Length: 533
Image (cartoon, rainbow, N blue to C red; front, side, top):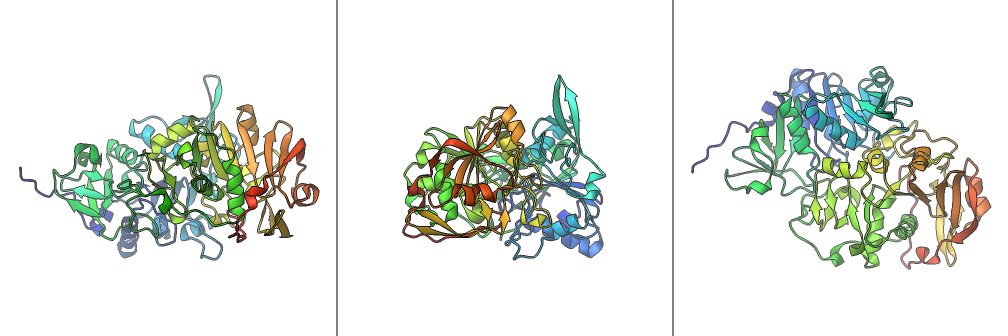
């Protein structure tokens, strides 16, 4: 049978011309992973050239771009191009880098901006695909997403246009997120065949691309997909096709497309090969490693465990060092199941994964609390047990937002927060553990967090087990307050812990000593994480 190339193949400028003024676009990406960066750049280039498409609303379940080589949404942060953005997370970086343009537009109130849970945004796509009137969920109750607090609004312009309501239904309280109606999907795969069928064989994740394509197609919109290469029609096996051609309107080809930020291609990430565990790097000794070692003690054989970015991402490497990696199944929001979650710019991918699920399906699992334990980071903790991981007043661009954090903690059985007790403290190793040479530049145990990303009191009402692990102590959330249950060697309970919190900490009747072996390593080099750890 002879196949002819379809008319679905466009130049980048031609594809950008398919987007009408005032359109709502939905973009599939997770920072640098699967980001259709060249297509987003083409949208910006066309706007600069002819003033169209203008006044766009852009939806991003997870961040698009990270500013470390992949700009993503920052390409489109141009006056007149964007009017609204709804995202699970945003490009962010250290204070040593320039403020992302998208953050400047948000701070200057030039666009309305909302930070919503990633899983909820995927739910919004699934419900919009079948014309349901928005999403009804309890994810986000008691957090900044709740309209009793901020309603997910990131600036004054967004506050004037609320998109979340609190409603009563069947005798319970729910959050209702407005229905969305995206006109265009901008997605990314690896290969397209001549009929527009899309395969993801070089990607580290599927994310929610299929859900976004279905949503847009059902609502009469256009689906644009960026790929690395074109293959002959009939050469893809049916089970390999992730997005079938009848859902695809336009294919653009970027042969320079990389797998993820600073990783042009690693076949272990895409599941094409399995690498020996001896090839996987362990983490050097540091304060973060001390915390991760203690966190690893919270794991039980047979656990299915989730983890987030930051210090917690080191926990799998601790098990790798101990030869215990096979005892635990790791699950991350980008979709990987099992294997070894990657660090740094490849976070969100996993080497040697047992399976790769769609993010939207993974979030169904997370929101329902089917897993055993999650390891997450924190910026601030307050006396109610609340945690802020999403906002720093005065420097919001140093954080990415909530991402999947709120979905994950919604019904998690056990939650382990990992972080340095005070930001920027100078520490050194001695025969008895760690020594505090200079106190931190900012307290992280504060009377009231700047933004509630995790509601401690709701967790207690749901019977969730909550632990906070730092290099100085281990604390538990109780009905009476936060209680110190373990103290690290080398630290004074009163001076280094109780006096460094802005609220009274409880102390267990019998506090334990954190094990000295957490601190033992001949290659110790102390690092001092920024406040955005």
